[in-house]
Image (cartoon, rainbow, N blue to C red; front, side):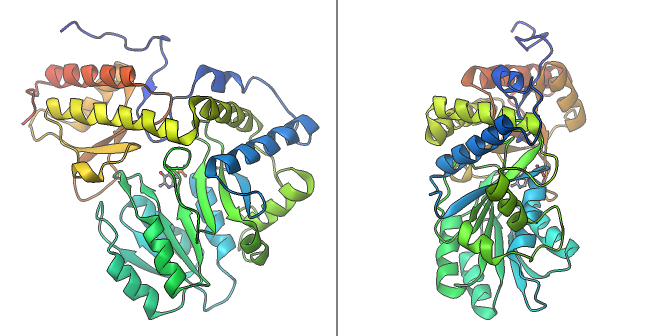
Length: 381
Ligand SMILES: *Cc1c(COP(=O)(O)O)cnc(C)c1O
């Protein structure tokens, strides 16, 4: 095999096989080469266009739903959704479903806000136990139930639709908050019974980091005024200002919005979320098949794998050390991701962003070369 020296066609730009921030197109980066005043009519039109395009992607009616963009990374938006959804009432209780790092983060958000909450912990990378959920939902009243759609820490898709039907039957009043950060834009989520669906500009939408957004039911949002225990993470207030003036309340990440507008045009040109999902699925199936040939095994069983990100078990060989593996791949222009579960040693490879089958094939070649250079036999034991 010929040695790979520099992988990247554009020179020094590395390929990001990560769950965000991720590889963006040149046109998305170029869209940022304008300075706009945040109160300029042109910028206000751009914000309006981005909100409308996000609604279209979700297939959400503008009568019932609103896109509320918010500065910061995805976590800021999840925190805002929970703050906004839960009334300032001592008895208001939150139920958190968790099977990984992002589920745990929901619980941390509740703890930091001093919200009464229960956590149903299913274990890392373990599917939700719906019978257990039903029992919990029958045991007491909840003001809010929070769950993660794609648990990015291991690449597990959670059954949000099944949860919605349990909620409809057992907790008709509870606000349902779904963290759909790493799925929105590619993997569909049925919206019935959901009140707040949280996502970010720099995952499957393929924009740059700087803001996230919440797809919120307008009627519910109207009932949430005054709930938030923070000024800046108040979605009801942010929504009101958006509707009143078309503006953010505080300095918006203007360049990130320009990038998002271009990214959303590209999503539409690709054929929308269904087409994007097919590309990611193609990437992921090549990745998993190629990795298996090298002897690398996914953490999850084949029928539980999702196209967003795949966790692979560390090879069991004395010469394998993740830090070294990572550095060598990075030197070849290939950026992968460490694991984020504590029970098993894994690394993760994302298939989202401006990545195509040829990029995945190249990554696999680089992984093969790096393992060989490290003295790990292929297929790895
Ligand atoms: C990326 C991600 C987040 C947000 O993480 P930030 O670092 O705050 O952007 C939240 N939940 C899930 C499931 C994610 O994948």
